[in-house]
Amino acid sequence: MNQDPKNPSSIKPSFHELEMMEAADFRHLNAFQCVYEEKSYTNAGHALHTIRKAIRRMIDHLEEAFECQLFKDEELGKLSPSPFAERLFNDLRFLTATQRCFSEHIRNVRQNGRVLQVGSSSAVFRTRAFRYLFRKLQLMRQIKISYTSVEPDDAGRFLVSGYCDLYIGCWSGNTKRYISEEVAETTFALYVPTDRAADYSDGHLPENGYIVSLDGVEIDPAKLPRLCKGWESLPEEKWLLWLDRPDQCPDDVVIFAPEASINLSHWAAVGPVGFSNIRQTLRATFLRQHPYEFLPALTQKIRLNLNN
Image (cartoon, rainbow, N blue to C red; front, top):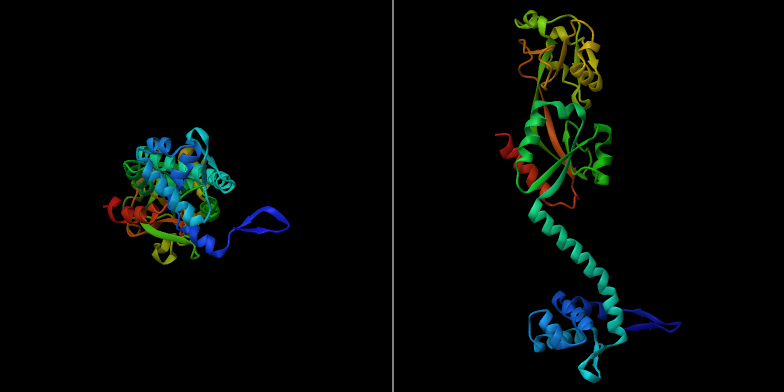
């Protein structure tokens, strides 16, 4: 290796030396580490369940690749590492630690499944479509699923930071760094007080009401019945509050919102004429450069199988 004249301890590999290093096999490097620790070719062979001759051949290959002697025979049959071997062993410690962490991760994945962080807004989480999808994912053996509350405005940031792996909602990344797949459709219903449900079952619509824009995406006005095009937009957080605390919402309120679990003692979901074909698409969005390569296959599986 080349040395800096001003700093004799510095070692700068040449282009040729880098080529030779690339020729080193991981099995040979593993044998080198074992020989370094055992100070014996024979003992290293026992530790690696092979013969002394095979260990010696691997060390010879490394010495040829690095063009440098690694070990010298000393008294009492022990080997003495060369200065190059000392540095090589120290450098390989980081690689070995990384390899062990990776092996442990793979072992945990095989035993327990991948941990998949799924994010969605609180409103999407309450929809029947998302609940159905989430339950199906929980039944898959190869993953362990965890839910994270993420609002649409934060979806991109949370995906980039790794806070969640998959965002499910109406939002989808609008740049090339994201991949979005349609995975479900959420239907809408008219929510009215239970004691007034009969008043709207024949298709009657009041002049005033509220429309919820799921995940910040408004319903196409062309799809709405003429009589409700002037209804007010209801923020998602207020819709969720009224669902759980109906005592805090106005009397005789009428809300057009995604199908979700409701308090049947106060709310009734009716489907008057004109609303039956209104749906919103839910997408699964993830980073194109996501380290978990199973995500593209998983979203395809969701799209093709889980909704059947």
